[in-house]
Length: 311
Image (cartoon, rainbow, N blue to C red; front, side, top):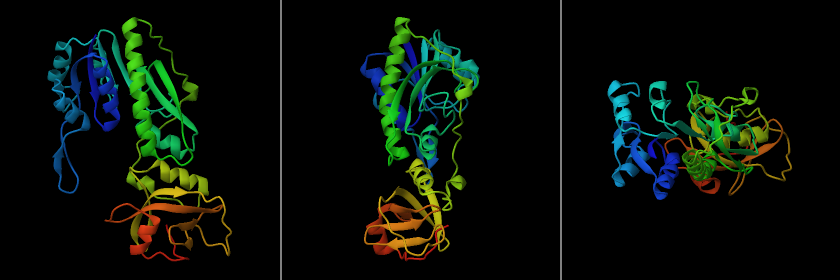
């Protein structure tokens, strides 16, 4: 079976690796063009490109997925199947080329959390469980017939970054199982229940500002759901303060209530902040222009005191 693999970030690496490890015929890999990144705008290749070059696999990096030359290149490869993991939205002219079809790996239990940021939103919304789904591509994004799913529990303190890594590995196994079922003619696609659908839109920096008037659990989920990227933030004395990790202390006796976002306690290794219904403990922080660090190290070089306001 001739397979074209399409992907870009590290999330996609285990899926490509597992197909190669199981001797599937990956006739080409498609990823995004190299892009300038960071302050120096150095041109950087995607993780999938770096891996593909190391393995000496045929590589395509189209600027446009609708360009006739790219579509012609895909047709000339005569693929039986296209496997998509964390790539771009494929036009119909591309995903209908393979003899069998094209399927995508999505990091949620579809139809829940359709969209660009399913991992983040599952944690922000306080879900206790999520998973991965493979589904055949259709024109409307994330709506195709489901092939396989795997469920994964979410730990109460787990960050989006940690869950990302888990789902990447679980997803690779599901990609392999899906390819095997398709190869054997045993795949049984099922239509998604539209009544259960929920969105997971892309998250922008402006939407990552912490609202200290919310409950402790809502703030805790918001912060871990955005860690490490794009990262929740707040202001302190006019400067941006990024919050990477928090905890919900089991025991805390408060004195006079401080307004929401106010610093309640500053210890050697913890910073407690008032919320609408209690407090959260700031565990890992990052001052603007500085590295990420634990509360104890942060406090050695940054002046936070009881009564200061975050907001």
